[in-house]
Every structure is written in C-alpha cells, then in structure tokens.
Length: 226
Image 1 (cartoon, rainbow, N blue to C red):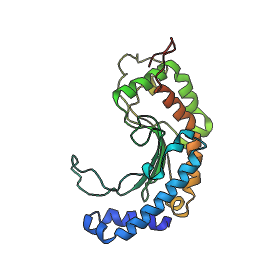
Image 2 (image 1 turned 120 degrees about the vertical axis):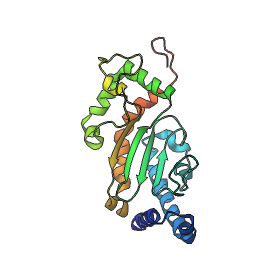
Image 3 (image 1 turned 45 degrees about the horizontal axis):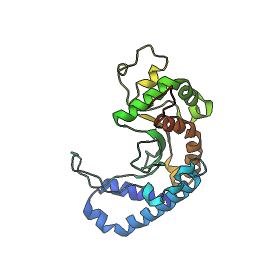
C-alpha cells in the first residue's frame, strides 16, 4: 500500500483539481484509511515515549486534504502530501509536537515548535537565557547530532530585544522557530520501514521536546517567572 500512497500523491500533484478528486474518490478514501492506520500505529508507538499523547485520537492527528486558499495566490484545492502531527495539546497546541510528512521525494519527520507567536518565543528565549547549557547539551549529544544535524528555523539577523550580541547562547536566542528534522526515503515509505525510523527519531527527539515544554510551563519559583 505504500507504493499506492506515493502513486496517489504523484497523480494528485499532476491533476490537482476537484474534478480529478471526485473521479478518484474511492482511491483517495482507500489511501486515507491506510494512512490513518499508519498514524494509529505510530501513535501507539509514541505513547511510551510521550505518555501525554494517550488522550489523542488517531483521526485528530491527521490534516485535511483540502487547502485553505482564501488568502493564498495558489488556488490549487488540495495538499499534495499527507501528514500526521502528535502533540500532547492537540494540533493547535503551542507546545512541541512530533511531525510526519509524506510526499514523493520529499518525505521527512520533524519536531519542535514551528513559527510560534511572540509570547511563546519570549518564553523559549527566557528558558535559553536561564538554562541554555541544557539546550546545547541536547543539541550536541552525539546520537541527536548525527540523526538531526543542526536545529532549523528562521533566525533574526541581529540579537533579539533584551539580549546582548555576546550572550553565550546568542546562536540559539536568534531562532524564531525551533525545529529539527530527518529525511525519509521513498523506499522507506513504500516498505513501511519509515515507521521504525520515525519512532527511533522521535525517541531521540524527546529531550529536545522536554526543554521546549519546560519553557512553556507557568513557573513562579522565586528565581524564574515565565
């Protein structure tokens, strides 16, 4: 079925129209059911890593195929990928989440927090200022570094407000998103081995998520107020 999944997404990319989708509705529903089963399996495997995910329903971890084109110059009606997102607060949570993206030639797994609002960025920067050594330890841990490489995300060209350019962790304070990712091959999607790769990657990612989640806690202990 992994072959059919990629084949369907290829065909959808070449025929991105309501007419094509209507004509291939049964194929789409088969693919959607298959992908939901895959997400169910991933969620089950993720719960021992992140017990807070136990409250999620698999169907709430996938995204609609329809694109929101109201404010976009790109009027293609459908996304040309399938994706799953696992966060303890659900898809709309401001906290960190585990992400799976399936698209021919462009599949990957990722995690962290992408383009958070200003108040969330402020809290993360406060945590970096308070305990940047811990974030650096996580990012430079050999297994983590080998699997994910560098942290990703848009960065400021200058120092953020309230932080000096010579801050010991300025390279992390400049980030506006806090993301790590790992590519997945088409072959891994086709034969299903990507699931084990994803679960292994998500396990390696857990300390990174723990740091970000800690930054978003409302803490008042006399020494730190977020």
